[in-house]
Image (cartoon, rainbow, N blue to C red; front, top):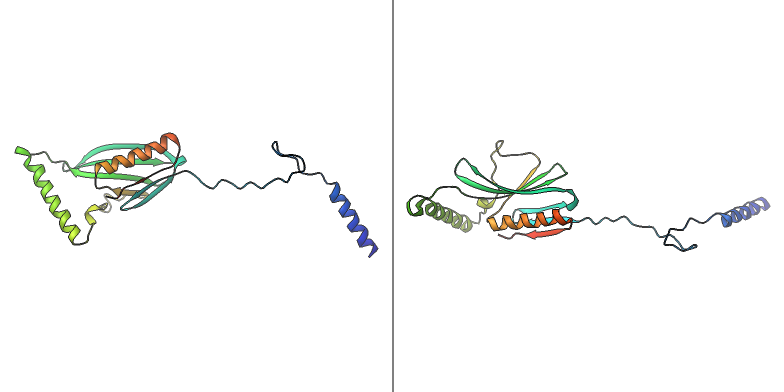
Length: 179
């Protein structure tokens, strides 16, 4: 028992003489050092769309681009791409007819009327498939690509402006498209 008491006394004495941890530059000697929690909040760029939601860490954005092209002479596609350091690509696009108007604009007017009737019929049936991305495997399917089809060029321009803003200033931003 005496040996145990001696051991405890020596241990207690050694602990009392152990040097205190070094103070940090802003810490007074004798103050307890607080555990710092890592910062888990990262700036996010977010796009809320009728077809889903896309989010990316702002620091992973490499470039934002917008361009137009014509597909098979029938459709003009305006596309916005957000390039990232990751493996997943994202494309936002708007499709419109690329047809030349005939005498007195008959071609474009006819296309507009047909598109309007098709849209009206789809809405009455409860289907919104005409608003969705259309893929024909394997010609239009790209691995690791997320695509969103937008209903207007204005909506596409809002996506570009928001992504560009986040890329340029390194700060989070959010855009919501409801159409």
